[in-house]
Amino acid sequence: MVRAGIWGLYGLLVSSASSYLYQVLMVSHLSQQSYSLAMVGMGSFLSFWWLASAVEASVVVGRASIRAMHLGLLMVVAFALAAATAFAGMAAMGAKPEMVAGAGMSAALSVLVRWSLGVAQTEGAWGGFVLITTSYAVTKASLALVCYDPVFAMVIPGVAALVGSAPALLIPRPRAILRLREVLALGLKFAPVPLLANLDLWLAPHWLGVSAGQYGVPAVLARPFFYLASGLKPAMLRAAMENPRAKLSLFLAGLPLLAAPVGFVALLSVRPVLPHPWDAFSAELLAWAVAAQASVATLNLAVNGLGKRSGWRWTLALLLAPLALFVPPLAQIVVALVSTALLAVGSSAKGTGGPCMRGSVVSCR
Image (cartoon, rainbow, N blue to C red; front, top):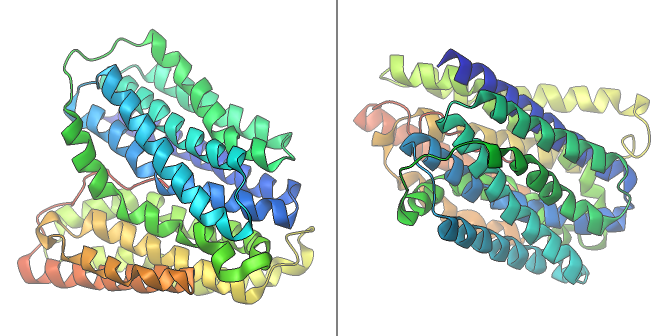
């Protein structure tokens, strides 16, 4: 268990760092117009990372693998969902087929690499696990360093996932086989948070029009507020198990919101010393981005920590998601906070019954 925790933390840190570096370099290397398209593509394949997360979690929890045919089917589903979403998001600026296909490919191959990670964890092949995560992160960061083309930017995560999956060929697979229905059921539980976290990236062109590229820097600067949920996950799960009244869980879930105004002021204070284009961001757009990511981080923690006995009533807040057609960050804030409130009410009324999805903070890199 200790080894699993240590290497799991290593994998999280390495992959998150490479993904964040990838976004930072794309903002620096691409023109605003090119980044507008790339941002939509990123939002599209990141929105469906939940399917890849479900594959990994199902393999680990079930100590079983997936039939090659079913794994291929899930990759096709991920491709279709991400590509369709990218096409819809890029429509306002003129969708480029090669970028749409790149977003779909990256989503599909993310399923493959997460399956590889699941197999490595199930078999206790921690050397293979480290090799997969390291090769993925190094490939992604290295390609981003030399990328100045938006089409290439779309395929970088997919290429990194393909390279990262290669070591899995040397790892024995579990003999037990998962049913496809089990994977899809878990995926539906994971889906709301990553979809909500990436609404602003996906719908930026519909919100800001030709100025969508101006949202790139604020979006990247605000992303660590969402990553804060991953760092607080162990404390949240411990609080959920030890505090039946969930007061401590609610406090921990609210920490990203408490950190948001402090972080916003800090980012504004360092703006004059940042290099171009990081010194030219809009304070208004940064405020929207920070508030949105902090709100979704709060929901992410609440879903994981407030107990499965809270039920699924919190998902009713997703009915407010159409607000995203007007101001995407406003929809993220409203849906996340209403969902968290519903979770808190359900948890207080019924008492918590342990973490809702133990160890299942969904990564939206």
